[in-house]
Length: 215
Image (cartoon, rainbow, N blue to C red; front, side, top):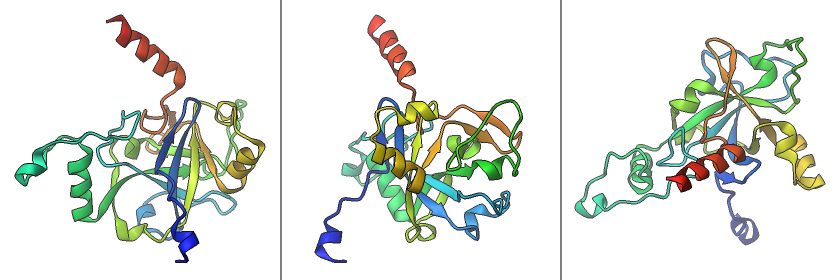
């Protein structure tokens, strides 16, 4: 690596803002072992399957990445708390695995057809696999370390995601990035709401804060 390239900061896995949540994801080739048993990507689908990585200590309902630490390591032990960032980081590093959620290209999820009820999808739209949104897949680091990284913008709707973005930002999203506004149950083939870890709507956040302050 040149000094210039080495000095470029690596984007955070997750960047939370009020209208959208940006996730850095890995682009999976069609032959990737994680896709074994899944629907083969439609030949005219411009999107690939993607993998969104969980930060150690995150749960399906985490709004912000976990930063919780504990004192267990002072005694040479690791705690069993799911939300402990430091202990789970050590655990993942020693096992050389990370946790991930699959993102499914929308055309492939719809098996090449589109509903006739007025629903339409963006060409760069993906759905969050509902099962691995709740119970993430354990992925060996060796399976993803050399894969291309992309950005997925999660939100409640496409207009909301683009609100406040510059023209260049919107162009980048369409040319190089992806959007996601819903989950998808692969067993029932029905849409599902996004889990809080992927995106937590600003309206719900306001209501949650209000309830906390009322107590």
